Structures are given as C-alpha cells and as structure tokens.
Image: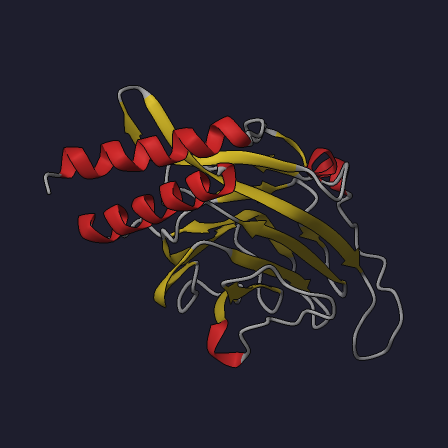
Length: 252
C-alpha cells in the first residue's frame, strides 16, 4: 500500500479518536500548571501531518518531589530547591524532540545535595512508540561536583503505586546520563529501542545535583521523549486499522 494511503488511514484514526476525546495543547508554562489536577492531560509533539492535520501524543499523570537531605547523614544540606513554580516545561514540538524541564535554580554550591523526581506518562493511541531518548542540558558542573539524570521507563503502562511496572523487569528500561565536572567522559545523550513498539510509556526521571565532596553543580535542565525512529509503513497501517476498529466497536 502506498505511504500516502497509510498516512491517510492513520489520520482518519486520529480524527475519529479526537471526535470522542480531545485535550488542550501542552503549554510552555511552569510545572505547577501540569500538577494542577491529578487528571490533567494535554497533547504535544507531532508524529505526522496529513492534509494540514497533526497526529499528536498525549501526556498525563504528572508528579514531582524534591529534597536536599543528604542520603548518607539524613540531614538537610541547605541546597536551593526549585519549586514547581520555578521549573519551566517546554513540550516537544515534533517527534524526537525532548519534553524539556528547565530552571535557573538547578544550581548548587559546595557541600550540598539535591534530588528531584519527575513523573509523567506518554500515551498516544496506537502502539507507535518504538523507543525513548533523553538529554541532559548541562552548564558544566565543577569537579568534584556532578550531576546525574536517571530515566526509569515502564513500557506498556504507567508506573503504579510503589513504582511498580506491571510487565515486570522485561518492561523496565533505564537511561543514565551524567556530567562529572570534568571535560571528558560525560554522557549527555542516551536512547533505547524497546523490544517492540508500545502505546504507553510511564516515565520517572531522577535528577541529582551533588557537591558533597566540593565543587559546584549547575545544569540548564533536561528532556526526554519518544525516539525519532518511526515504525515501518505496514506497522503504521496495522496500528491505525486496529484503532479504527476499536473506535467503531465502542460506538456500536
């Protein structure tokens, strides 16, 4: 089948879905906006566009926590902690671009420690997420200060209570990025390809700024999102056709 026909069927499926449920576009606003309600959901990114109409992802289940408690001593370190009002969220405009979290307060001085935990769920309609990419936007920590960013991904489900992934270990993927404060050997970009495409990914992102041994740690922010590798046209066709069948069945 020609690619145009495949894309048209995908568009028809997404249009049918939009007729039953639609969400606002994810705005460039502080994280507090995304935390306003446990049921808040919005659209971002653009997988493809047919006849001027976009097919977008949705994102929901936002969560956030932060602490400056030293895990070795159990005592606070006095590090500045960015609140959800001080963290700017910039949604991805296109597939493969990162969903960004940035703040000028991701910046600590010597002998401090702060850990942030961000959560959300990416949930487009058909199974079109082949993998995930992560980026650390660094402003160069000074050794021995460092910054680490760990993504824990639950393929096929949102993270359940107690950070449980229903599919078990086979559906948990980990991405680890870091800057050691040295000019070389840092990992600022990483990606993973899932065993098979999925229609939902639970995301937990842990950001740690650590200067307990001295130095400083400053980053601009971080981002993550679906990978740029698209499924084959035949896979898109099957996904779209399946979605249409489900929608028609629900209306029957």
